Amino acid sequence: MAPAPPRNRSATSSVASSKPSVKGPLHPDSFLNELTAMFERSTAKGSVWVTLKRSSLKSKVQRNKMKTAGEPIEFRCLIRATDGKKTISTSVGAKDHQRFQASYATILKAHMTSLKKRERKDRRKTTDSDKKREVSKKAPSGPKAF
Image (tube, rainbow, N blue to C red; front, side, top):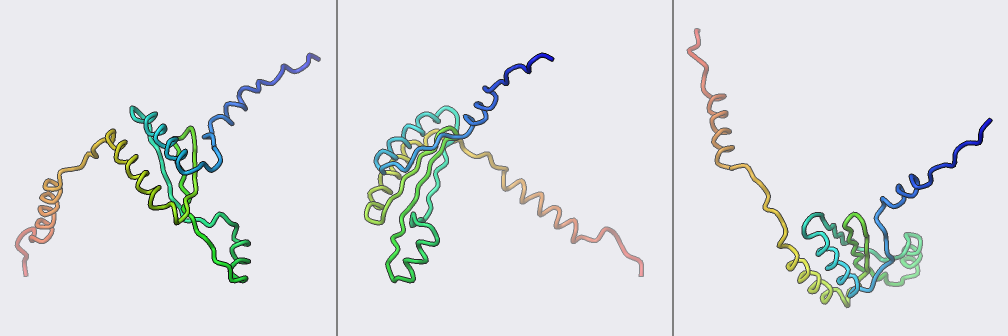
């Protein structure tokens, strides 16, 4: 009996590479620099998703222990961004939040130029046709015999 041919390992490595690469939490300033680079890469084609979430960066068990001990829990804002290939994140405290938000808003305003205008149906046409349907439903179809 002949030995089995060697397995093709490249098929399994392509599956692992299809997931977006994840970096650890970045400093807020370097996060903003990376976010700017993401927006610039996706200007011609692509999207960038940004999520903001309230977080204490502690597990539920640790938060419960802190509550029972009477310690204050510092909540932070966890910000994540991805373009489908690369994922970055940072955590911003209450003290730095205003400065971060101002810088973030500036970046968003600068890179909102490549948005496409949404196609909408003409509202007048749809409301006129709806009114015609309502009138035809209310109007009697013909004389009724008693």
